[in-house]
Length: 240
Ligand SMILES: [Zn+2]
Ligand SMILES: [Zn+2]
Image (cartoon, rainbow, N blue to C red; front, side):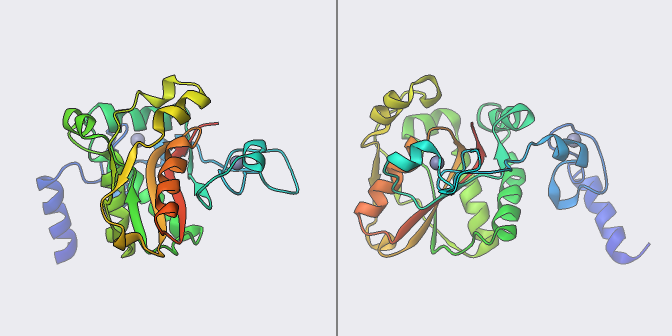
C-alpha cells in the first residue's frame, strides 16, 4: 500500500461518509466526489429533448424554438437552464435538501450543476447570485439551499459571488398558487442592496426549482432595470 492510499484509508476511517451514497447510504468506492452511487445517479432523470431556448420547457419541434408562453410574454432573463427533471427521485431529493436538514446535499446538486455548466459551455458570467429567502424563512430553515449551491459554484468556477438581492416580501408558498397568483405574489418581493456590483454585469441566478419562472423573472427584472448587462438562470430541476 503506497502512502497515498494508506492516507486515504485513514481518512475513510475518520470520515466514513466518503464513498457512501448520499441518497441510498450504500458504500461504493467508485463514488468519490460524485456523492452518489451510479444506481441513484441513473434514477435522477435528466431534462433532455426539444426544449424552449428561453425557459427550457419541453416543446414539440418548432422552428422558433420557443414555447407558447415565451412567444408572447416578456422575459427579463436571457435563458434559464436545468440539468434535471422535477420528478421522482429528483423531487424527493430536493425536498429532503430543503425540509429534512440534508444541508450537505448542496455538494451533490452543486457538482451536478457544475458538470452541466462545464459540459454546456454555460460559464460566461461575471457574478453568481442566489435567489434569496425572506429572513423569517431563513430563520426557521436555518439555511438557504440556493445560497449554498451558489457559493459552491462560485468557488469551483472562480466567478464572483454576491448576495446583493434580498427578499423583502414574505410570499406565500408559490407551488400552491396559479400562474397569475404567483406573479402577483412575487411582485416587488426583491430589493438590491448594492447597485454598483451589478452594473453592466452578466449575472447567473441560482434557484432550486423552475416552475412557472415568475421568481427568476421578477428577480431578473430588478437586476436589468438597475443596470445589469444580462441575466441568466440555472436551477437544479425544472417542472413541466
Ligand atoms: Zn445510491
Ligand atoms: Zn419558454
